[in-house]
Image (cartoon, rainbow, N blue to C red; front, side):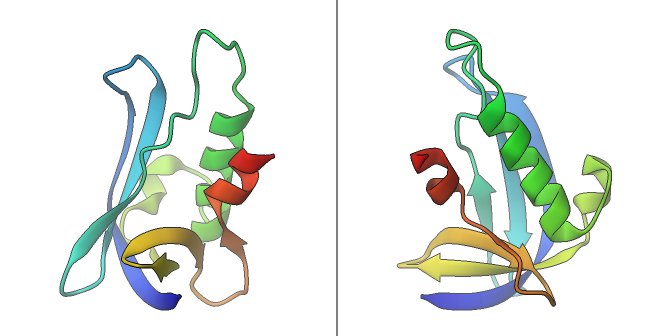
Length: 105
């Protein structure tokens, strides 16, 4: 697993092609860019929003901001496994969010 620093370039919160709530955090490594997210955060048919709330709050916490708009320009760390982002973390503190761990529960 590789750890790199990245700058948040853009954030997207949207309804995907299947009608689910999704979000993507676009990260810039300086020489390349990559998106983190695109999980189905809310499925209106299931009537649950625990995943959405946890995912969004975790991203805000990791970047140390209170408002979604404040994410752009923040520096974070990412853990990559075979080029795929597995975790996003605070730039200084050992505070990581790994969505697949939460979604397994």
